[in-house]
Length: 236
Image (cartoon, rainbow, N blue to C red; front, top):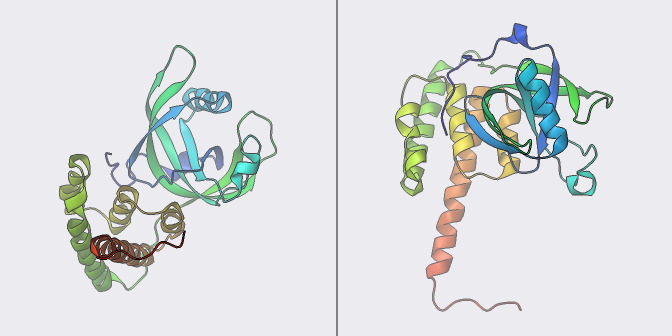
């Protein structure tokens, strides 16, 4: 995973307010990251073709629970999505695509448009990060705690994830810091969606810290249970 600098690729004036939707059941995209995608369904190939011919923008949205019953139709989505721009693509001989999508900014899906194409579209508004005022001192403390927690967890990361640490320790905004950590760490989809939903960066950082604390606590409890002897009785 690589990072995208703050506001490097997004200009609100260039977003027309209509988003092509790429809903998935297993991915929450965040701003500031690069996400590889393999596109094989015909409707989403057509979406990519249109995007490449125009502004190259696609909104990644998470399917809401119960999507399995209507996957081929228009199952419900979480209203907060992430707008991304196709930065590289490779069209395969059979029409499939391999893409690299750069997360740009949160967008709120206001209203899904009536179907006129094979893929879904929605009216959307951009949602930039919000910084509560005053909050600079508390934000510095949150930033330090977040970096300390990330470093503790980094021992279990592979090399590609460890490469994030120098970046996170640099001069990046709190919004970018929380998004990079949230995207990188193994958190549940519901938690990641909560983090995407939260526009206030201080509350987002606090939610992320609480989620990481619960993750560490559960890992410690699992390790103690695995090492206990004699083992407990099975209910089966």
